[in-house]
Length: 448
Image 1 (cartoon, rainbow, N blue to C red):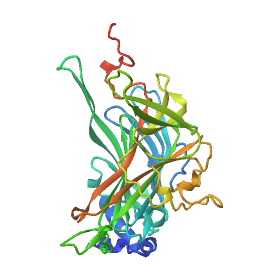
Image 2: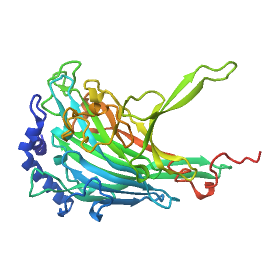
Image 3: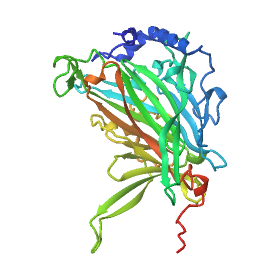
Image 4: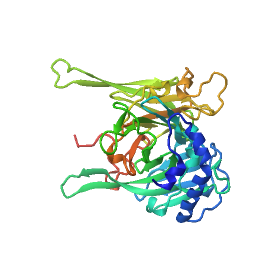
């Protein structure tokens, strides 16, 4: 059993984990500072920039021009509950004269962890010290990149609040496209590149990797990976509530869920007044003498707050009210949910996406610590109450039901959950289009 796990505290059922983490905070911080020293000296930094800052100092700016020519830029700061917050996220592909604003802010909004036996559930962000659990990273954990120093607010060790814990690096993702030309000897292909921004936060026996991946085609992928260890205090489940780990069928690791919420404050083209649209497709039998079934897609404007459920052939997009691409089409971003196991145990986890009207106090999907007034409720489901939707905030819920396995020890491999937003008509053509194909926009001219 490793020393850091003894210090970080296990998840004893029926005991408030946040209180246990606070009690051992000084020891954890001391270990974190030791790891930070190995990665380089910690440098004191000023207080984080306010969330609504139009710009930020060099220390809080992330800018990267990828080898394919796309540039991403953003500001960052760090909060005591949510951890890393990204702001004023802009995307500038080749051929665009100015950056295109995508998001005003983006952050985790909760990691809700209920156990299958009903004994406990945790809100890891607002109840278990997620932000204070920022881990220092050695250079090998940020290959080819830079590790920034983060000043952790409300640090458990106020004398050592600085942690080298924010990695920014680039990574190849494989083919961005491939197309054979008029002859077999001519192939157009491009290997895609991503900017990665990530932190590691320890909560109890788990370590969460919060990854933001900005692609050169304009997509943004948001993922949380859980790793670390299975809690040794949770090996007393029975059949149907856990899985036998180790020799025979004596110790059953208790199954549990990780319901991860993200909060995206859209600001397409630098304007908060965006629209939300829902699209649904319905397949009908073939028409008389038809050769195949028919599929019709309908658009539904979402004008009021929504608790939405993912369905087959359903998707949503957030649309700019001010910006258009060079084809005169409104810019938008489409939500692309990842694989999810929906947890029906709480009202706020019963839906896949929420669109709410922006309200500053609404910051966390459950156990919201901000004061929104009498009767406002402390979870996102309570905030969908019929308001007109003119400044949409998207809350995306992706669930993972963790039924442990022998391979989860030791250490536990990362299990990922997440989603992405993809550009839809942000640019008039593929932003990675090679010059030889730049004139092929719209219906091809085949000489007919």
